[in-house]
Image (cartoon, rainbow, N blue to C red; front, top):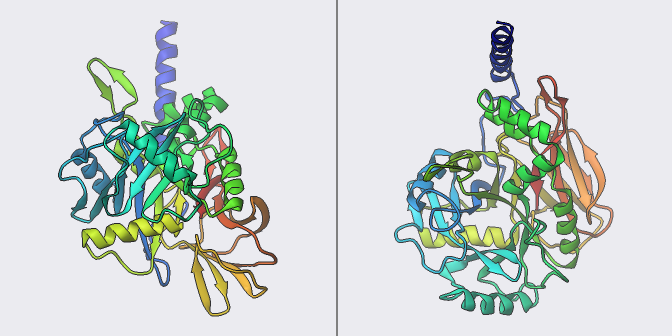
Length: 396
């Protein structure tokens, strides 16, 4: 009888706490705010590093397209592992979603995310791809114009790069959502399990409290950026294939859910037109030039954010390389004032040098260097958590 009473008490307490969690107001931005493109630019949201049943993931390319549309994406880049044939009928527009085909290729002990402008290819088999990447990565930065080579999860155990990083590398995956979950488990198994407890009641909160800042990846990114322009991306590493069950897999998190957690926001000076060839080039060029930021969209919709270098009457997008003079400043704009305390942080060569807590902020540039911006908020979670800082936006 005592056991039944105790079990009933635990179940009732869980349900009551779940009710509190489900109704807890964790809105970082007011929902009434209309989301608009930043002044002078168009913000397009998309995901990179997505796997289908053709390699390590689940779901067909077409079903993943449906999930990407449900997640409200503007573009998606499918990157199955070592693909040498393009899935028929995949690339192109699917209503308002632009689907592109890239790949995640094995190279030495690492994995490389690859995207070619106008359908460029790495060859017909793994041998061809090794020769291709050996050639491209050994070239000076900026030599190869029609390809994009990004190192996936560069510090994940078993996939690290040994020795000096190649000069032909265009960028690295700074945030990899699968690595974030692994880091959270390693940091605190109890906290990880607590997120699983609240997951049925508030999925968004469960993922927000699991986020762990990729400090080592950020340090690596800053070091590489001092050598030559190096873009940073958020990789969803979405497989929708987490828990084996009989002859199938429990799709957790689903592709749609993974797409809603974080993404890359491209800033274009002209809008996409619906013409596949020209829009593919626009997407490729913006990625190649670093004209984008990446964000944890599960925190809040960042549409409207921008960070530009102002030089007298000229404005330069993030990713730009400009000769230094004493008239320059970094101008940052947020879509609206967060409901929680927040800070906009300016970094130079990886060192935090300034911060502000205004929707519109200007940082005076005092000396040359590599600059980037982050936006952090500190929402209040229900007990036992309380307040926690989480980085919402990372600029290139």
